[in-house]
Length: 453
Image (cartoon, rainbow, N blue to C red; front, side, top):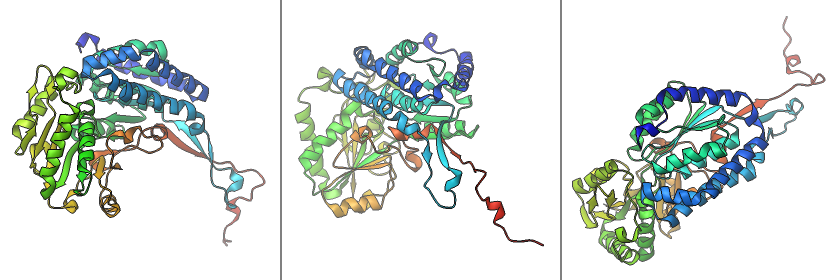
């Protein structure tokens, strides 16, 4: 993105002040106002879907069908869930009645936290911007959205459409690279919400440190998700599913299967099944069919090429890289050790390391964002669940749990903090404010005391 398209650094604080004034006006406290803004957000997506398909193709090389499902449909699902439920989510909750306190009418009121910051990554420029935005709007917050500077065309289209659909006194988008990001983070917010991508634990720590200056709570989603393979699984079925899950969005997903943990004596069988699955799914060069998209930038393409060049494992599929075209061939690497270069950071690309382990017990010592287990053995599944920590566990499935309504999405420890999607996103931006009132007739607890002489 050219610098003259960036938000001027000296405008960031002015934008923040405008948002604070808009929030203090009180109009976002109305549930009807929030619904109207959410409806406008839905219109923005529905009326401009074709244009977004084009910009996403230019930015990420992604096929239109994939963008329609992953970006437009899933974003709309988040927005429409908020539209349908904002009244219920925002309603005051009466506390559980007890004989001691019922007369005080204890209640929990749902109040917006204030002006909040959403920092979105490059891999899903719409879903991971507008999904959390819908939760923030539903909560009644004012929002500053800072999308990744690596996405040029989609950001420019979104910025162009923004004032046509949304109230810019309460919702603003700012574009820019590091200087703008630093200025954005220095402002005082009621909440930080961010996804981080390649190098995400490092980036996540930097964001958390910036937020700590003002004691601002942070929601972080980081990544590196293992797949645990039971040798008794249906290997052909699992191989197809794994190749699909690894190549969705060219592997640039925080919940993409990052590496596979396989018993040593099953590794070759599993690798052969992966090779067969890939040959069946991609009989032609994926560059010709656009079945595999681009890496977001030359810098990230070089990073992935370095992983392939420096691994101590054996490349058994792919391995090719075309940096100027931002292309990395779907790649499988076997005999990868725990200390390998591919295991030191989240891959965020179409590279799948296969890590041979002595047994399943050796595969459950990693604390990730998500764990994928391919097995029909109830005892094994229970063992993995009971002896690991992760944001989610998916059995015999990959990637799609983010889209499942009604369950939280989030990490633990170094894989992230906080929960998102649906009401869980609303909760991030909501302050639970308790209230009670004592009527005159109530016998005060001050009268219940020992006698003092």
